[in-house]
Image 1 (tube, helix red, strand yellow):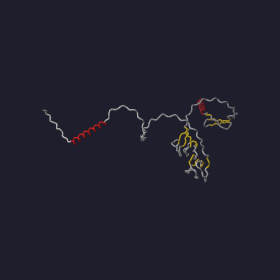
Image 2 (cartoon, helix red, strand yellow):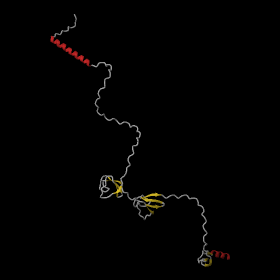
Image 3 (cartoon, helix red, strand yellow):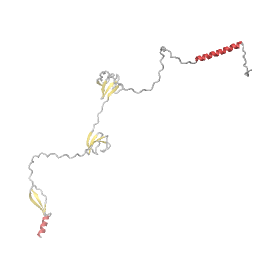
Image 4 (tube, rainbow, N blue to C red):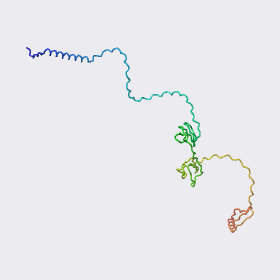
Length: 253
């Protein structure tokens, strides 16, 4: 006899046996369904199907980064020539008169154009100034050689030591100085030029007056001098005779 224990034989009623069979059948069916849901091996590619209908447009995507600049294009053809423009005729502004939009008038030295229909005078907000009136320009004044005793104003021009200066402001002060601007500096002495050609001889002059002659002598005994008296009543330089008398006296001894 075998030593293995005997397996007990289940004892079921008819209804319990039917229930057990149905449960096992249901489980087998669920396992079969689970196996059916598992993907099988990839099959061969089938024929291309027909194109489907166009879908709805999607939402606008975000803007991408800016791309690199492209090469410059060729210049375009010149456009047609426009009509010639023309400025309205300028008229003198007249008071108590309506000037219409676009009218151009002259007033107080300036030129104005009406921005709307207006009876206001130029300078009002209804007018646009095209050209403001000018003013007289300040002109330099040449004042000669600078002098400490004179008062000077702006743009006065003075000369000093061969140079020229112009005043930069009112009451410029001593020259040269901060109040003066040098406009022309004294030049250096130039190189001596070559001698010129001898000029032509001049005409012979008229005869001169006769020279005075000695008509007498004036003796200065104290000074041992003899003074010539000339014909024109003048006296010539004296002749000093002291040394001659001393020499004679020495030789006669």
